[in-house]
Length: 191
Length: 191
DNA sequence: GTCTATAAACAGATAGAC
DNA sequence: GTCTATCTGTTTATAGAC
Image (cartoon, rainbow over all chains, first blue to last red; front, side, top):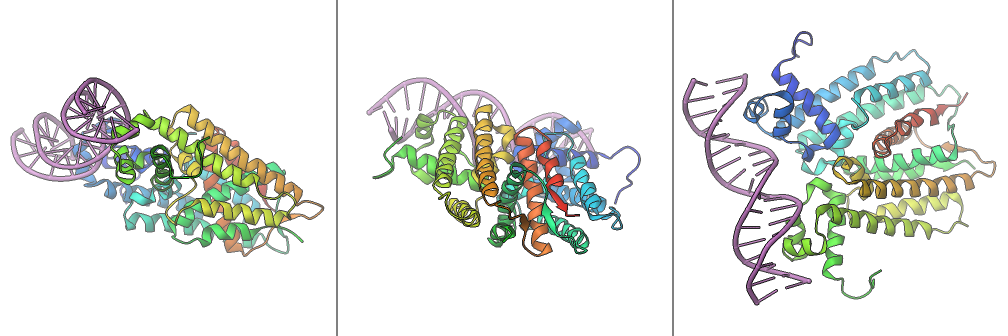
């Protein structure tokens, strides 16, 4: 909402630092004190803008999600599917400020036990939006051309293991074992 | 090491509960007090067996890793690749005591910022061992049959997104962007 | 809006009795 | 080995002055 130009407000600076801290340390890994030292205001000022830590994390996930999903929607759907996927991957890389962060919603999925239902739903929405966009691009790339894995067995194995790890996060986030089970079903040696 | 039969010792009960707590809550999400209430001994007794929390988490990851990797090695390599992968997936499911846990090493990868180098290396070893085993099975399933994804676009998209999330964990764990980059390279529309 | 001051609970860890 | 008691520092959060 606020004006994106000009000097960021204290509130915006708090939120931006909170996003980076969550991506780096997780929900239980940063404190109002950490934020106060980064932003240069006292912890009581942070409570003025975000009364509880749950309020803060909800606004953080919403801002992060809005930013990523908007950039995703801006990828030109007229481009070849491969190119769209490449831009999608770049987009994720650029969200990581350096090598010490992971996706905020991936981190919050790991910390889901501590978060209120409102945050769980926001993280679920982020997952679903990404998956829907990817499904659209994959289907668009169809055109009689089969989808296949084009890499070494080592690389395919790393991808498969990453998919298992990610599916465990999603399985708990959505409270359904189907998220894990379908990985096995999807990955088949062709007969 | 210890006798696996008979009544578990206090030390074993502490470690077993610690493993479940880490899988459910993460490294910063449980305390010696939580453990003391679950096991029924005082926190000072836990410090007797595990002087620091870093000692405890190192032993937890080693025991978890040993258990999972041993079960993995016991999968009969003479079985068809598909069957081996199915048993591998079951193995992971059984490590999760209910729907509220994720893989201990996936969780610790998210919490890696707080962990000493010894634990980072142990988690890396777990990742590498899983990936090597999967690469072996995938390559074994070759036999002129191509590997392909056999599912709906929706399911493929969920798998791809999970792989991205997992690759961010691995990328930070191994301190190399290659873990993220190769996901894009692997997943191609065939031409 | 931002501050000082403080509350109440909790963290990991240690000393020393038994 | 297990306990009681305690230390030191941290956490989220609030009251109230300016």
